[in-house]
Length: 383
Image (tube, rainbow, N blue to C red):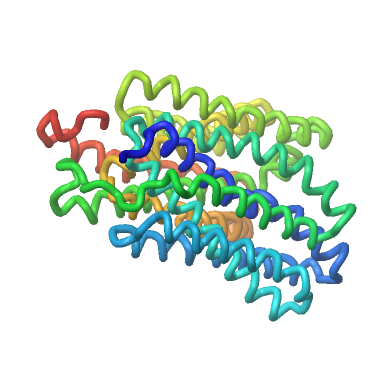
């Protein structure tokens, strides 16, 4: 008997939402490790980096095994493994032991989240699926940032790790609705482009997140440097985060008109032009425009990046690698920003770096877009 497609869809959304809680809670976990378990700021940061490294390994593992996976068994193993390692973290407070446990917990979380992205590639309307998932993550992020500090105050890191374990175990209830196997790949994925085009898309994901990471790392400092008052900068940063939800809504509405690549190219081009224009016009008003544009485009771009990847590689292998590409790029972004700032001694160079990375992402997707324009109409429906 076939599963109800609606239950399958919402199971995949729930899976992606439950597995990302660990990632969303990392800023609170860093502080909790310092305040309650005596970790230095540096060691707490290293633990977080190790957790993220595990996420990347989990994404790569999922991508490598995707064609052969029994998704129900794989997800059950990842969820149980992740929950167990989070619970075990309660009793191991030395750096070495906790690092090993967090590496494993990150791997499990990354495997589950990547599986959700890979499985959503098979949705009839990928833009709708990814819009709902990312919008739900925005809401979950707000809940986590509100609830985790209260949990930390009462129970410390132990309470945070138990909460993550409980959320993970709750997603076990949706695993029976997942497909055991992915359906065969459609015709538009055939040919040599199965490697080249997804590779270009993943490179673009990395370029986008280097752009975001380098700008966001210095967002507060830039606002102050451009003459805005500290309270105004902080309020703008908070308000700008709320704009990210508009990107989800806009992506959902735009996707109704059909197509993935044109809206994505437009958003990337707009982001690149805004950042580069800001490097020429370095004043407070342009800073506000750039901040708003970045937040509106951020989730919009994420959704259509995943939608485009699901089109060029319906197997889900490329989509499963997105968390790894994002994680590596977010680690590189602030370091790259620091490097150009050290060399140039001006935030203009940070803006040029961010705008240049967004422009490179636009070029990558333009190549993918024009490659599909030469295909027959039936092989590019929805692209």
